[in-house]
Length: 181
Image 1: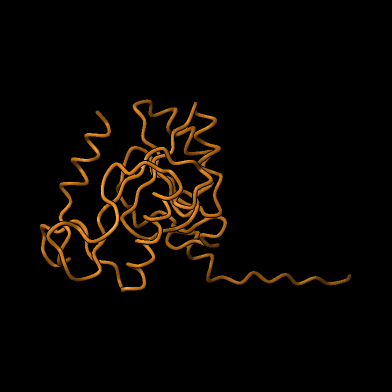
Image 2: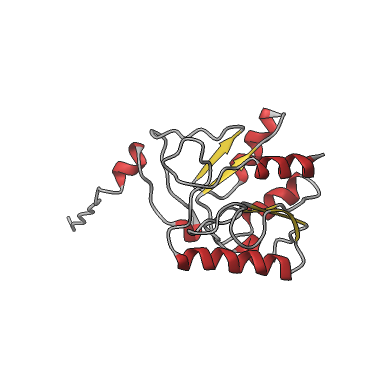
């Protein structure tokens, strides 16, 4: 049932002019980025991930521009390039886990940590998982953006924060003065 739901969701995406309110997926910024995303889709297929939706090429009905077919892979191992590297395109990799500890280990087994998402019917458990994920921002049961909350990454996703008190501290330079009495 989940596979059918994902296929329907991906099929309902509307690629096109970003100025059109009906558009849900715009083009890549350049031919170079389009080729990069296409290469990752090919790598996913060649490495044994199962293509659930999307794939190589442009979306049906679009024969020009740097549009990518929104793509979903399952049977993805955490050591595959499509799981480990930043693709910067509409490509989703589904990685299964055994239990909460395994899920947290998979989430933290990355060189990056800008933002993460936790969804659960058990809000207390979701907050516990969120507190253990190594990311600058973790959204729990929401996709809402809060501009007043500090924003910034961990690991190779950057150092420092924007917004809030933490963001202001980035512009301060503490100074220590040591004297001998």
